[in-house]
Length: 259
Image (cartoon, rainbow, N blue to C red; front, top):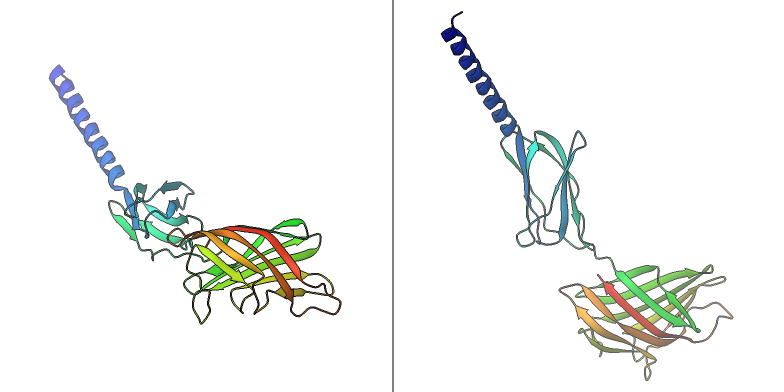
């Protein structure tokens, strides 16, 4: 083989190798795709995670203004997409999606809703002892403000609650920051429950009188779903067994909640 043939052969080989490399690179580019979604309201999803069948995990954070999230350049295959939300919002169910080469797989999500759970702190003083609720229940909405805290201490359950109505023929309806007297009428009402043998013992603020306590709301933000304040009241026995204690006084109560 002469020198010209050798050079020509090498040159053709280089072209073929280059062509093969380019073809391989092109295949690698189109062998990936994208997952995209819009999750509203914007700003309440902390992370979107796509887990491949191989176990490889990819994640992204949605745009805080638009709620749009994209996970680009994912290898083709099947993925499980999970959404993590801020506290107090329901977490969407995971979705299965197939990523195809060169395409965008769009996922649809319903608008996020709140889980309506009461969270935060609530404490009070009873007979000189401070109790802090470990379980919180209730509702803060356009229909009702109801807060209930419970703690089990030394085998005895202590429960404090208060209700301030939003609607109805009551002289003190919930309107936000302000003071709501307890004991002048049926509502607003304060309640205390002592769960011990042979109880439970139950106390309510009286449904009429000069007032035996109050709930003072010092902070209320319905846009941020927060409420805070203080409370104190004296309640009378309601359905207590024979020999139950008399009136009970709850003092120095405080609460700071999200709902």
